[in-house]
Length: 178
Image (cartoon, rainbow, N blue to C red; front, side, top):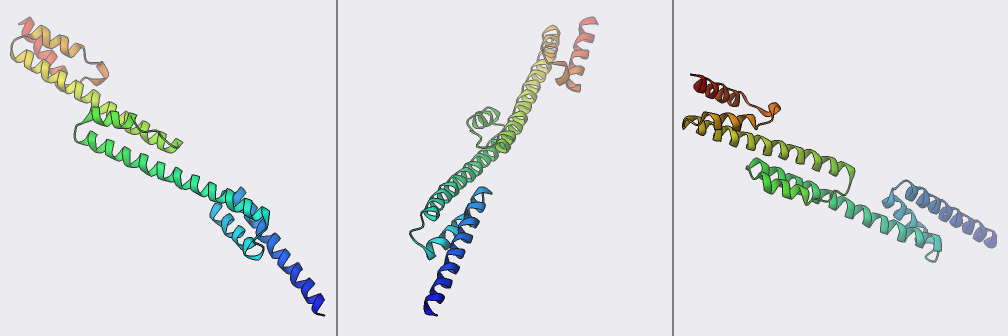
């Protein structure tokens, strides 16, 4: 009877090992590396010399490390995006653009966020250029340099013309005609 009990116990132990090994493999294949690692440890607790469990343990550890490094890179990139947006909010647009250019996106979602932030900064840069041109045209018109004021306004792309720019141009044309 004792021998029979030992055989049954050995079979149950082997069944638990095989079940845990299968769970470790399936979890690994699904990208559930924490679960895979725990299942591998269950096998190693029962059989410390089981080669398949050791291999799965090492593979899962490598994947977990890669995953953690990737997540850290994503967090770092998002922090850098936020910092660039803060620079843009402060009007430091060139610095914001440089900060965004320096980001190496670790994923498509971060790449999209960088592209979106870059587009916003470029839009702000264009708006600042238009505002500066309008200011220069306003000054030229105030000094009686109406032709120069008109040429400054005409250099602004049509889609970016503001109501103020149109008014400065109209007033300068009127002054030249009158």
